[in-house]
Length: 523
Image (tube, rainbow, N blue to C red; front, side, top):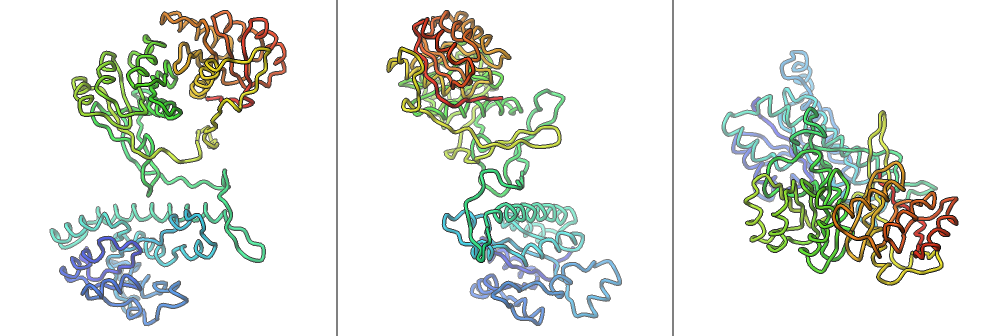
């Protein structure tokens, strides 16, 4: 398809002058509007105002510029259809073969802390999406460009072939409809903030909106899904900077699998709980060891000591740049993946000998999305992210004996880890490191027993340890088992109908127990 005429109307003017100059050099007439036309004219690019094409001025404060039959007719008439061509000629409609449009920055405007209703409404683009949709519908005759990043490739193709291929026009149309779909979704979501009572005002966004519009784009194909017979890929929010683990850069190693990313996400979320140097070792989405110590190497050694057998083939996360001393220790273990904020060059050298080891570098910005999604058959469950933090002031002593300062530090550490263990979750801890983890059992007392078995297998004593439970102990047996294993302090939500029996058991064992009043189920 040769291009005789292009209509340029862009908010984001990145690269548009150079692009227009290239089109002019190829003999393309440029038609433009408002600010775009002014910029092109100032920089010496010959341009025809859209009002000259339509015979109508821009009006209503710029709300109506391109909503005219001579614009949409020029875009929409089918070049190969005799009747369309006859009608276009009869009404003085000239072909528009390339539409270059990007939209008002509605989402950026909506994100402004002091945005007004008028600003929000005036940043709803009407003419732009209408032209984009018209051009995308008629892709067999018209090219549509919504992303400045596509300018160089279009110029290259036009210089090489003198036209845009059908394959290119279809690709551009697909991208265009994805853009307008996302744009409409953004508007639909943000307009929920408006209220009308004589006047229109903007309120805070709802924690859980009435409608959620997910616009995702393919970022990376996985080796496979949870199992080798399942295809899988990573998708990220379209049109936004990629944050969190999804934005991590892979520095070495073979292709990532679905399960790798699930485990890496769990590991990264756990180490993000801590301010000091911290390490988490994850196996099958559960921590088999975690620690926060004075140095990263100490943290790794403590985390590994909790369950060295399960750590084999695990996934590791660090909340500090990995130094050579830490890398040297980690390299002694078979590990599937590591994620960290960075790696010192000497540390990378130590890992380089393990060609299959996947190393990921986390971006500086974390995932700020306040919502979490879980799919069920026929629907989607949506909840707020669990970002609740506790400190000593939030703890209510339930027993005759209050915990010591050292026990409180161990309790709070274990509580943070328990938040990231599949329920029913039990974590035995000392100050800054786990010594036994029991995960995902149907019975809480069984989780206690498994955590004690894990500690014994690792050669660790639970004498004087603290135990954290993600939900209340329904009966005294769980606390009794923890006391028998050596724990002297307990942290749990409380709230069982048998709380008094549980407290009585703790008192008889001389244990200190605190209630948090909140639970941390992880299903």
